[in-house]
Amino acid sequence: MKSIQSEKLEQAKALVKAEELGAWLTFVRETVEGADPVLPLIYEGGLTWQSALIVTGEGRTVAVVGNYDADPLKASGDWDEVVPYVQSIKDSLIDALEMHVPAGKEIAVNFSKSDVKSDGLSHGMYLLLKDYFAGTRFENALVSAENVIRKLRGVKSESELSRIRAAVLDTLEIFEVVQAMARAGQSERSIYDLIHSLMGERNLGFAWDRHGDPIVNSGPNSMIGHGIPSSDIVIELGHIFHIDLGVEKDEYCSDLQRSWYVTAGEETPADALDAFDAVRRAILAAKDALKPGVEGWEVDSAARESIIHSGYDEYLHAVGHQVGRVAHDGGTILGPRWERYGNTPFGTVEDGEVYTLELGVTLESRGYLGIEEMVVVTKDGCEWIGKPQEELWKLVVV
Image 1 (cartoon, rainbow, N blue to C red):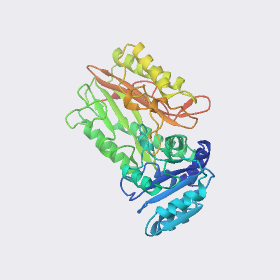
Image 2: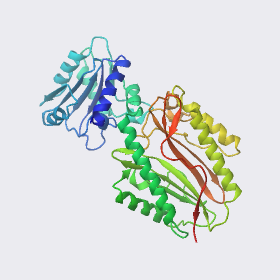
Image 3: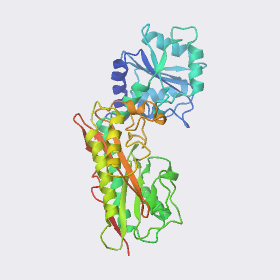
Image 4: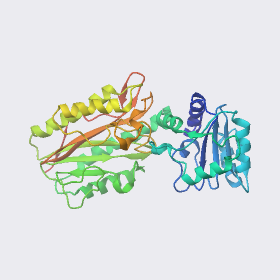
């Protein structure tokens, strides 16, 4: 069975060729902390000295690395050439590029003004490349690799999709356990601790920083957004109880939200049901708009218009983001054309990308009611990953 890295390198070869580049160059060092986000997709391991991982327009893979890093790359079987060096990478790197990059062709490197997952080349390493290339034919050849990385991260292989589906399944099962165990008087923090315990039992990691995963809300006084669960806020009758949870399983992630009405058994009040229905309609509007070829902002616009038409305030974020090795996986955003999102809302949706569809409304006396689903884009539209929430659940407490 091919590794994820083998699959993604094959994908990268086609992308570099399609972009008519001479090469795509990932340039890293001391990757134990702060590694380029794209590195785990093309190499499973760490690198110490200055290292150049190159995918050429000819479809070759070339690694120029420190001599003690060379053997693991050779053993992976993913690299057509592994060139070790001792004192300096400069000459070996330039020789490799001279051999494989035709005259007049550009070299894409990992910087981007808008996409954080395409911006892994540090400023210092960029300056180093500029120094190395000064006086060579590559002096003015560097361009952004954003288009290559956006598609490489975004368009999932079958192996990647399988891992994402497994992470979603575990997340949904954790929601079921929480629903069965949550009681009135329990604090947000106690539910947060319960979920951490359940994740530990299943050997699951966190889709974003552990400190803020999951988000747990109960009632009108809870932190909205990327808040921290409180030890002082407890589950009470009449509250909306809400969880935003992302887990990591086999290096791939989920990101889902679910909401409950806290009741002693009575019927759910109309204001809560109306809010849920409005949120659900907006998510379905986004789902109907999501298909290959549309731009991200168009999907967001469909959801935004729907929630406003239902009489609620517009949400203050994008309706969706890509999910993969982390919850926020870069690339095209299903978001409004706001400056803070740069050019990411103008990205074109591709078959095989995985997105969230998420939004919520705040009920003054009850709290935040949010839903977040995950979908995979298909050639004709998109499909749910996991069973969506189709009605406002009841959290029955006594």
